[in-house]
Length: 468
Image (cartoon, rainbow, N blue to C red; front, side, top):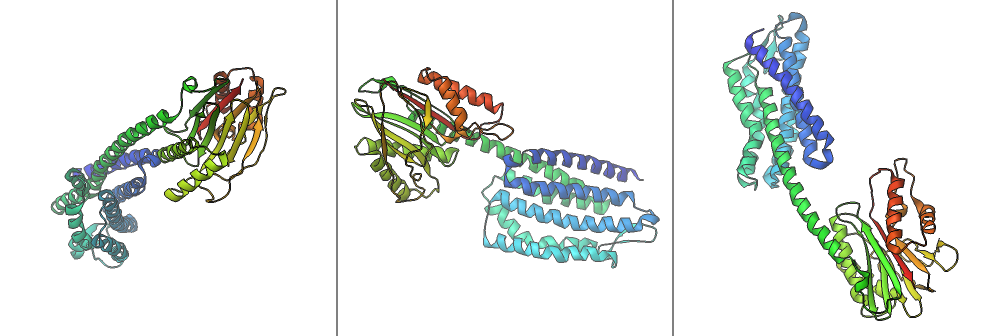
């Protein structure tokens, strides 16, 4: 084997190893990189296959007994080169994000013409169009070899438009263009030096360069997203009440609440505020989604509930108003479950409306915490126009009310078992003499102990109220 052949084979083995490592890395972070990963990973596979087929072709070159293997490897190599060209075009269009009629038409034609282009390569088994393998097993270029790139002429007008009109930086365009430039340079080299097979290796280097684009792009997105999440988290944190002692009016109660989001920001929320000197409103709610969108939906719902409650009215009227307003102004598809109550601090009378939320746990003067299933309406913005039933009960000094979201009872561990309502009641009753802040802290510790390291998959919100 000549030195140039040895060099080519060595580079191809090295290239296959590099493609394998990069492919494995991208597959481990598939969700992180998104759609581009699918196309880019296909490029990696086709590039590695090109390297393998070219390696195979050189190893059987000049071996008469391996003539069939030489023919097959070269046919597959030619077809796979077209496959890689098609995948590059899809990838470039996606990365440069330019959608015009010309590009759409060229892409469709490129896909359609792929099949006759591949068929011509297969016909080389019987007709020496691009190459031939003689009886001695020697590969030779045929007269039509120089025309084998006719297939790519289809996309030249769209390629020019993509290069000029795409909004990406020229650095990005040049790196993407390396898919064309490097193989072209390699093709010129191979025309003058047969045996120096650099085209598959050039394609591999082009893919490595474009790996830089994907990584850099993702890093920019992460920084941008983290900035947005930080702002959303700060906004969410700022609208949740922190100091019950700052409330005006009667002080014959104690209250404490906490919200632990599953992500940087969550869809759960709680609130407590005085409507007047003797009426306290409390609520716990859960938006149907998580993340930034749910956090902003949460803030809208929270502001609407509080602003409407301060105008007066029953819990049912307040929730009905909020449902109407959100339904008319939002098309996000999200909805929110709410338990909303107004407590008369003079008498302990509670008027409540449950809009699709978990039933609260109540501690009376004797016995322990129990969950009573009262009338239940649909979530806000789930079934527009549906009535919201209301119910009432009376609290006496020593009574307590514990509100929560389903992230508490549905917390799970590795065996998929749930924390559940029964376990929640066991914790509440074992610690019913603890103050509200301690009770919530203990409940949080028990949830973590139960989960045993299993990641939290839903927001967990708790509110504990004691009537004196």
